[in-house]
Image 1: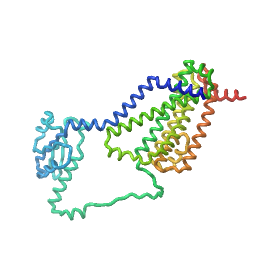
Image 2: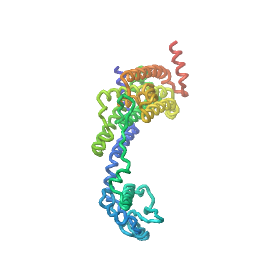
Image 3: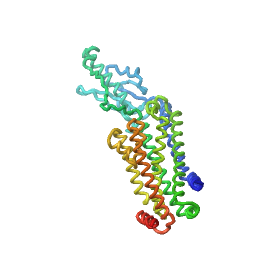
Image 4: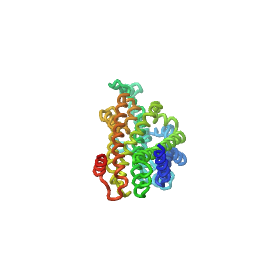
Length: 410
């Protein structure tokens, strides 16, 4: 046990000292802060610039003076209504007196509206709210000309009452879709990103001959488990740091109404947090031990990427199977299978639990299958690691490493 803690401390110390770890942590925290603060920054910029100045020219008097009602509406524009020619509008835009303009004309009983801008860019898209308000004013004008009373208009205007009813009797919680997607994606990325570090750590120490000292002072099993646990703890602390930063930023930069609309955290109970940690730990161990296996087979750091390819493919299959099955239809049989299948259960089962789609029996079976997979991978990884870790020649294949394991047992 003492040797296990020694390997863990050594691994954690080396991990946090890496420039790549420090820089990536700072960058992710900066991205989190920037992402949450962006709406407030854009809002402040818009307030500083003031409302967009728009001129509306109705030289043909199509609207018969009713456009003045636009100024009484709650629209985020500084609206000027004048009968102005195109050349005058062009000069006003070039002189920054206005930003855009509408020119209204009537030709063969057809109303034509020309939107004039200095340059066609995304920020100069046609303001649909203003266009909709103008359309409503014109409709009301024509209705009044036809002499249609409000009662008659109400009779011909559709007033449908709609409702949604599900045939499924189980109560499925779809209110936490945003949280569910965030939980699934975060678990997937955390497990995949941190487990890769195990292979890189083993390969780096192997090429620096540090492994010779470790092997002579403790068992390969202790080294594998110590490095896996050490990197996992650093990864878990990093995730907690990111989540804490996101929570603080959400409370500082976002309105409480927006938070309540996006996040319904009523189902995020202490029990859910515990079960999520269980899946995180088991999923991490499964993939970390696989990466430890591939890391022990190579002799040069530049070979680690090609050696990790099969495991990375398995991880991507598990991620896509879990993430997209619940994002497209969490009640489907594919999503239920993904929750049970060991390579994807850690990515999607917590989300299914949060949505009320997983029974206690499903959870128990899923965890048992995941534990069995971790035990099998651990046994193979430790055996291969024991025979391949001191190989400094050519890259050893998994087949050769397993053959050595069988010969050693004999």
